[in-house]
Length: 154
View 1 (cartoon, rainbow, N blue to C red):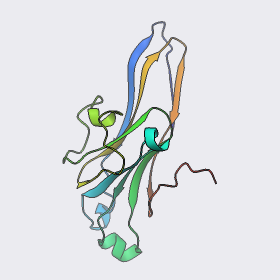
View 2: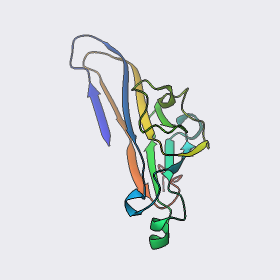
View 3: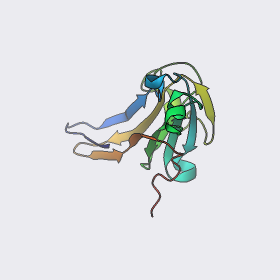
């Protein structure tokens, strides 16, 4: 998804945040569990890309039928991008300014939780001047493998 935010006004806008989150019930429609194992695979600071995954519990009816372990992922190489996941059973962040969606409050790389919860991505911009455009890309997707390769140049 490509996002462009343009300040069409005559005043400077401050403290902007763009957030998207999902409650990944990967295989629930096939009799699987509501809970997933969520993991921060990469961070902008450590890896140059932010990646979070939500993996289905295996075995379940999906893996028995298809032989795979589905992972829903969130990804961006835009800087700054903060990916959040957390180990409490809430289906959404506690508002747009939830600290778990900030570079300071988001879980560290390789931290994982197993619960029925959300994964999300946030982008922050301190100042957007009149006529200025702020652009970034991100994606959510479903794969049947670990997505560490996302963003690699081949």
